[in-house]
Amino acid sequence: EADIYQTPRYLVIGTGKKITLECSQTMGHDKMYWYQQDPGMELHLIHYSYGVNSTEKGDLSSESTVSRIRTEHFPLTLESARPSHTSQYLCASSSDRGGEKLFFGSGTQLSVL
Amino acid sequence: GENVEQHPSTLSVQEGDSAVIKCTYSDSASNYFPWYKQELGKRPQLIIDIRSNVGEKKDQRIAVTLNKTAKHFSLHITETQPEDSAVYFCAAIFRGGGADGLTFGKGTHLIIQP
Image (cartoon, rainbow over all chains, first blue to last red):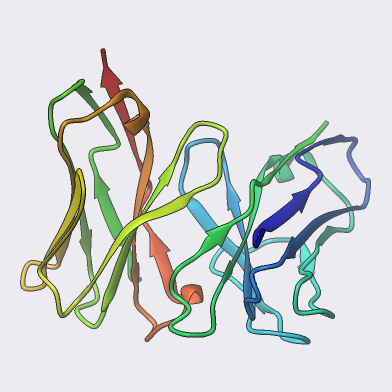
């Protein structure tokens, strides 16, 4: 079934650790996005990609980085996690045509101690 | 800068009553207005959207209306049910298309009282 998969679902780590949040989609979409969201709060775009080898920063400044080597895969990396990075990270994709309709993954809830 | 204002931040209604959530936007060039529903602990999901060439759109118990002159759009839910309890986000596209141009409102927590 076409979907967007995020792993891990929950992650608790110590300060200073390097982490990678995984996102894969089988939707066949070219555009992919990362949003940061505190529980029940607004969605902030932190990264997006139009396709392979394309990455752009979003509206909210983030210390994370992303890569897009394969169409279906859009991982997000934090080189040195801090407590201020504690949040939910949502991956999303949209189709080429129009591209406005977002399909979200289930998210990764990150807690940095 | 450009932004989307959403009101109220919390809305509590009796089961069976109607709920209305309102959003205003600042850029008259915006042409696409989606609404997302996020249940507790789940992913946001698109529930309805409207384009600027349409004034109203309905899908069963939910409807969206758009007033381009006043630059506001609203979500209407009739005959509310417990499963309507969620956070609802409105959004608008400012930058000519593509979801990277989406600006979201801050969300409305809708609580359906039994």
